Image 1 (cartoon, rainbow, N blue to C red):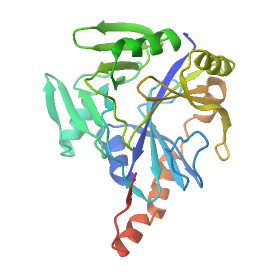
Image 2: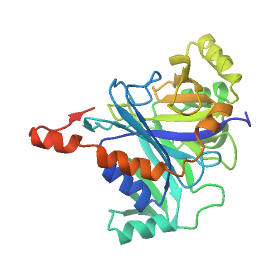
Image 3: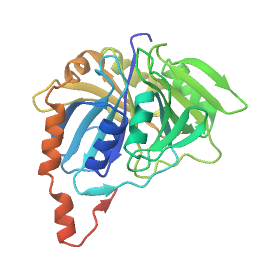
Image 4: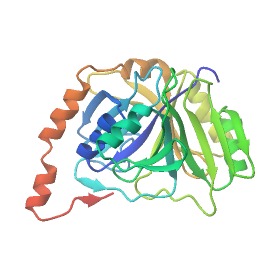
Length: 298
């Protein structure tokens, strides 16, 4: 499974201005590319919504060798109810801590040198106040699970992830496809995992020829396939093939063919300008204010 890569986590965002400020100015990420779509995604990349939406990829470096965030914005939706499914992203960056203090972005020290903060929408981030590793400042994504052993069977035995750490007492495990990649942390919770409306999606790549095998495996194992193998178009860019799965707790997982995705995910030097232009052209906040109506909740 050495050819598989952890790619990104998808966040639904209700306010692009505040969200961009957090990722770009507080965390210090770059806008890697920005894309606008006139209708909903065939693989529900933007959630269960049919209308106009945008996708912005942000990260500390190119998508080829960095784990990044995908910010999906549905025009007309201003808020998404949070569940207990996403427990946070942990990154190492003394610069991000310094930026947050300078910009007076709320920080709270949870253990020595580790600060908890929230992106707009309530998504938790944990900032380690130290120099980032050379590979990638993003260290892990933490997801809640209701049955750790069942989840380990899925992620390790079926999806081929290596178990790096396992702590039965604390009901947590750390998994990954490679030492130098962002890891997936599974944290056991009491009760069921609630995805609410803000639910995200974690994405990985694999050689394109493995996608149909992966789909067949999940069929044989009676596991949930949310979107069977499908081609997704991005205007003016490469077409990629994806299959969307769900783990035992319903966490959405995208596997995309690596070869076409590397072409699609090339950094766009105009990305930041495209995002800024799209935000300037988006008059939806003004329209709702004039109508004296709130934006819809997801």
